[in-house]
Image 1 (tube, rainbow, N blue to C red):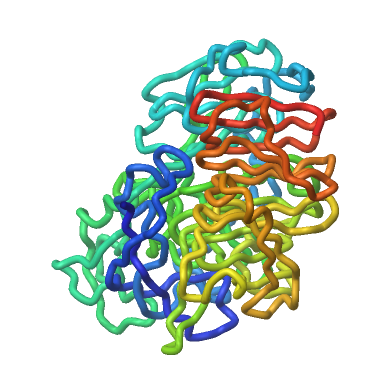
Image 2 (cartoon, rainbow, N blue to C red):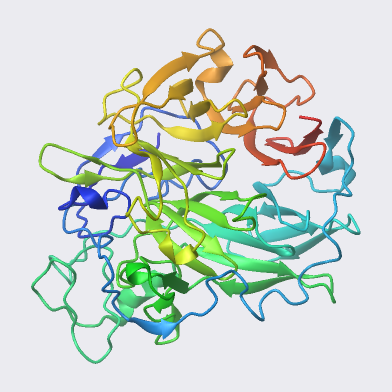
Length: 508
């Protein structure tokens, strides 16, 4: 049985509900009644913080700073997405769809992929696969599989395609706990000034530098890998550590140092680099079309981080407040891109919908004039109380504008919008009579108006444009782990990763 840590981060200002940091202290663990695993290395078997469910603790919100970025001041200069010098030579030929257009193709057999943990497509239509510490890519031009072993850590969780020839690998990590040597210190606050002590946001005590605690920055986070066009090999490009922000809507600045004492700070709060809250990377989605094409969003134990090339902004998340004013943010296992480019995010409690500003550094800005929100932070009262886990594992919008949420153990739900600021939206259970739909691992909305449903033990299902449910017999495995859809090609390309391997469906 998995374990979950309940936790909070105090929301002293309600306006800050999308971008949280703060002083977190763990509370009593509670049992996770679900026993459904989504993907190996994420929900399955890790249990050391990666399925813990929430931001732990109470305190001031380190993510609400409107523009006093600690450690900022150097112009990052690459926020427009050009990322000069990092893309050259990585794109293997023109961006064309050369993949089979047959309705069903077993890619694991055809390309020798076998069984893998996670799959993704980049903008060059290269197919990326992840298996523990091995990263593989089937190039779109040669359609030959290249593996590199030992390039990434064995605690890898997902792979997502980015720009042509580039992908991102996420890692799991344990939640930080109270430190006996530093009583009272925020669990995620790490002193980076080696010469003098530092005072955390909302605290009064000054804490000294600790070389031991500095090592915590190494845990989890995201690596960028690239396909080298000259050698044809996969190379580790960077351990992402360049955080950018637009304080007050101004020029993009790098927030905090990238390396301290030889230790890469990885992904940490963009508003204050001392807070290493986004540690365990649990989910990802690539933007395959539209104005922000090539951007990648990753869901973590704390919130959602936006990545563009080798820069990122962290973070924002839907939350809720208890009667004491403490703020709760669940683990984000579910991400999607709506038909109009909105970002769909759902954690174990809440979900939200935001239209992202074109500027990467605006992502954690809670001003709805910059990042309009169709839903700020909501739950479905027809399913559960606010304090109960909903275990969201899929969030999609079909072409008719309807929203769907899939739960790890509570089924498929259609969501109807009420108002953007309401803590509740309207939910309707779909397919309750189909037992296989009780346990869902992933959802995908396709160009023809369908919704594909990856179940944990009943195979692949499809909600047709006419809103009838049917079993997709072409995918024979019972356990469907991941769905990745590319709407930018014709016919559309749906990657179906199962416990048996990878099958691709075309024509939806």
